[in-house]
Figure (cartoon, helix red, strand yellow):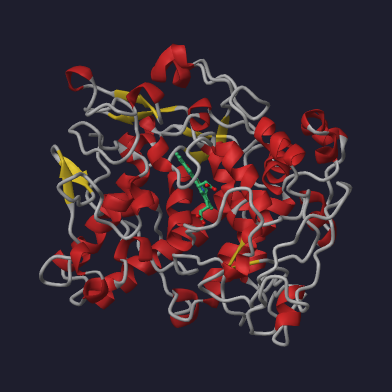
Length: 509
Ligand code: HEM
């Protein structure tokens, strides 16, 4: 459904026009009851026209299920520790043991390990829901997105040197940086709190390291004289970032055909000219595919281990939650030896290529540490510390349609109930009306061989991300079509390894 300019807009949005429709108003149309799940539940009833600073919907389809106690219990079972989505990693094998014997965490030959954290850094650049209640139907159009729906690095720059002066040096040009031992960190307040545009970029050491590298790259642009003003340094870094998203991250995640088609005018999701917003189908389901790429453990670096050697670490280890100098990769703590040695995470070529490790496949298994998150990483009910449960309950928050309903609407192949038999054994109706996140993961597993997203996940992720790039008047696609990167070792080429080298952090360290 679209408005006069062809922009995606919900049926409720159309009826409401630009005005807010108050809960219970006669103007708020009842949403169809969930497919095959019986009585209608009270629909989310506050709707406004889609706005860039609010979430919105792409599809006006019935929810996959109603928020009954039975459905909530089924979602919790589906995402439970030890349930069908838990990779059941043998944590007793230790971080190195799980690298040598990855078990259910199979390798994706198309992605290096660091792409997961690029994906997380992308998420934190464009979307932040800090208010919606978990598992309680809520109107996306009435919920604030605290990030701008654009690749503008607001997670790094905040509101700029005058809006967020604490992030900047006194010269109002350079971003403040921090140190952990000999290596870079994000700046911190005396109590350890990260002083950055989005605190989620201190959620684990790897995404923290990417943030710290962006700070270093911004400052390097000024030190080297490549930029002389804040505005120009930000523009250059932001365009290089957009280049990475379009030319490195998306082809790796979707394959090469779909990004090309979407960039050249496939407008199935975001007709050109529409103002951008973050759709909840993307935010709570499709884009959370990245949670399945997180490995239980990594080689964190080459010099921070015992005796100054390699350091292997669990991404999270519940026994380390209160440790002053934790051995895992949790964020928030700036101990020496807790930096990232990037040649494990990205392919730098040359001598450093020998160190690179693959990502985990995109599938319906999540690493076991993600079922026991450190409480500081979640907002809201801290009794729900399994990430899979949070993702699935969020489907009720937004009354998301099923994967099947959206695939059918878009004329894409629909997975059969046989292909979803395991989720049907958890709760029979889910085999025909599957939570979108699970559906996208199963599609990637079956139709993308775990190496890339399937047709529906690819379109939701690619259509949204490329839609945001195309809708941004100050992005390079609009402001300077034909622009090519300038900061890499080979002119016109640029990837994460180039950015890390430019920031001076790409060594085997
Ligand atoms: C160790 C890595 C990660 C951890 C611990 C993590 C954890 C979380 C948590 C706790 C939430 C909030 C869940 C909720 O209450 O609904 C969340 C949200 C989200 N995550 Fe992750 N995540 C990780 C990596 C990723 C990756 C790799 C991606 C995508 C490629 C991703 C995409 C998202 C998105 C889109 C949201 C919703 C953001 C919002 O609008 O508020 N995450 N994640």
